[in-house]
Amino acid sequence: MPDMPPSFELLPGAAGSPVILHVPHSAREIPPDVRAGIVLDDDALERELDHITDAHTAEIAEAAAGLAGTAPWRFVNRLSRLVVDPERFPDEREEMTAVGMGAVYTRTTHRGLLRPADTDPEPLIERYFHPYARAMTEAVADRLAATGRAVIVDVHSYPTERLPYELHGEGPRPPVCLGTDAFHTSPGLLAAAREAFAACGGTGLDSPFAGTYVPLEFYGKRAEVGALMVEIRRDTYMTEPGGPAGPGLTRLAEALAALVDAVSD
Figure 1 (spheres, rainbow, N blue to C red):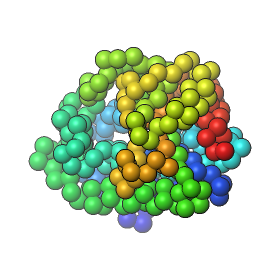
Figure 2: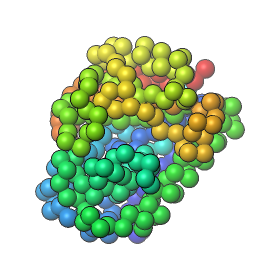
Figure 3: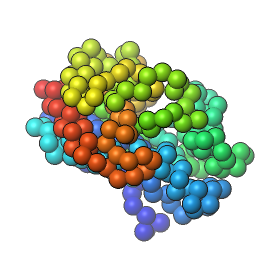
Figure 4: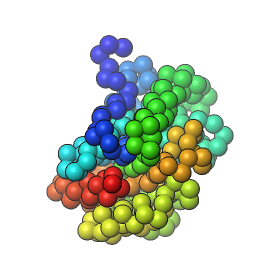
């Protein structure tokens, strides 16, 4: 549809930068034909978007890119994760399917009905999920070719209070949660993140969210692809749920820029 924005965007950084800031959940946009398959009325959908969207994370990544000595690349999802969630497995490997939140969600953050249970996810997966995955794979391959390595830093946020959909939300909820992978998160990358975000209220590890995003072509195979998930607790920079950003955004952007510079050399 000609009036719709692109579903994702790769924003170039410095030619010699290995870093890709990946921002998958910051948008609220839903194409009209996709909206037609969602059963919530408009008010309920806006409330759901308030809860599920990682609000202002694209702005944090943009500000960090401007502050960094070596500008990172940015891969930004321009559509809501209620269209498809590009970080889920599109098959039986995805544990969030148990709460109706696989690649195509059928349940809300509060476990209410989002789409009919018999919704066929394949059209949305073909239209949005696979092109996104291919483009992200190409972006990582390009950084490998240009610099010999790639560092994917996922930029997320999460609510101060646990939401009903969370499968592993019983643990600590630090100001900044660092999600790691045993193969792709090196000790050096983790140490750099801990140092960079130390002034943002403290960091925790893999709670309430764990793991990293790496395109499957490289996952568990290419150690030159580093990955870290940065989950920012929303009360540190915005009014919850879905409200405006506050002064904490600048502090977090500065910390993210410091991490970018630490791992760019």
